[in-house]
Length: 423
Image 1 (cartoon, helix red, strand yellow):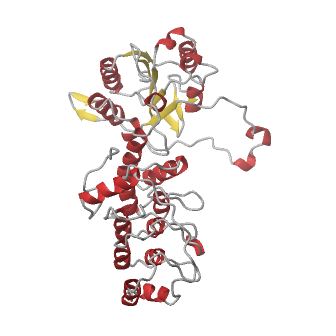
Image 2 (cartoon, rainbow, N blue to C red):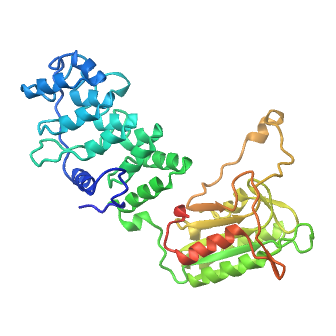
Image 3 (cartoon, helix red, strand yellow):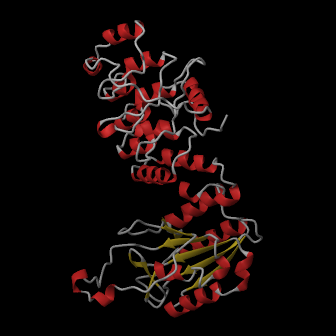
């Protein structure tokens, strides 16, 4: 059985048996359900299903009515039960071993959806769980296809996520089923936006369990030393109103943590803009980078706006300028290797010198081509438009670094094997 990253409580209200049956369905080949014969199910049954009048339908089935029949328009009993949220009928139908579970609906906005996808799309958690528990008998001819997609290629979990049915998404994310690449990205982004990080973690674990070789899923990190950490610390001691008191605590902790992880650290303090540019250029030309698996660049300074920080001579430098030194054309020894940037500076509220787009000449909007910022991860101390902060301690030790660097370092120190996306 494939490994599943969840506890028995991950399916709300479901039993351990639900998980076991669901996992067996993933392994079993899905049935190629035949097209139903339209007109074999009395059309008036659709109204009975909608109103919850199930006695007539049960009597018809008991008198050898075909459980897979369809109305003139193409509604099957199971698809109609899902459309009209009739859990009792779904449970009754699932007891029939001849039931086909994956027949796609043929009309309306739900055209191309299996009953399972319909239930997920409509957010019918109880029906989703009932279908996941099917079939309970080994004599059943059809197995539920939890990886079924719509006619547009959307999986059940994506259909639920787009409609914000997070209880259904929680249940489906716990299944160790493969998702189309696009769906995995979209559901992950929707979950992050909705602060459903349990879903993000489950989807991340499924990627980890995929059949892709580990060498293709993770960066190599087998050199010794493992990498280089460049710390650019701007203290502004000659600017009393701007002095970054306590920044030494951040530098000391970063050195301690990364030394413990077998990284080389280099610290440069209060470089001017030209000095910063020269140091970056020199670093990216060094042959020793071939011997490192990773480079981490830490910038400790003040910020002017969302993506601009100050060097020691109060000149601005953008994060794009910083990252541009590490593109393959300028830094070939780090091609295909991870470059991580820890950016400790405020990203608001200074928005001076903005120019209205309507006042710019067309030539101002033409930018030269540049290499893509590949294999890079920027981790900011604050969201766009917000300030970052420093800790204030006690009178004897009034400044003890920044919350961002201190917290990041402590987590890295205690849980260094977790993924950065999980921070």
